[in-house]
Length: 131
Image (cartoon, rainbow, N blue to C red; front, side, top):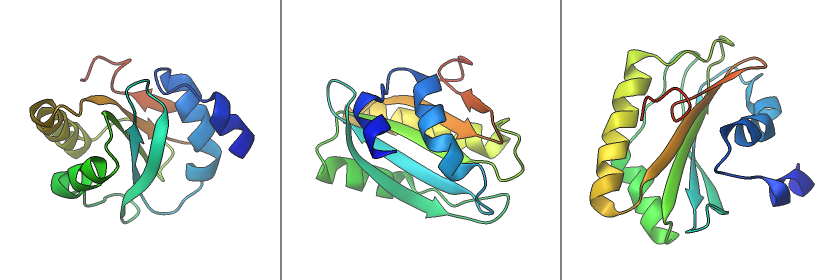
């Protein structure tokens, strides 16, 4: 996994999903990660935002941006799993993504994507034109 990280392209949702899928698809709880990126979309830090329940998690926009500012991130990507195996975004997923996108625009730390991994599949908000 460490070797794959060096070639990981954060502008390509499929490579990001592939990198995180094996680790996250078998988790029994929702785990939300904030991937903090530099100007060239290289990973600065992977930050666990929330570990929730089997079908929900609590995401604080404030906490996401506090950490992004601490790391001097230029861009932000969200990634989380759906323990059910179905990566289809819930209404709550869509709402929190829009909220974080708006906050990122105000703070000049744009949200580049939100990826939901399931069991061997994923959904990219960017690819689906949801952001």
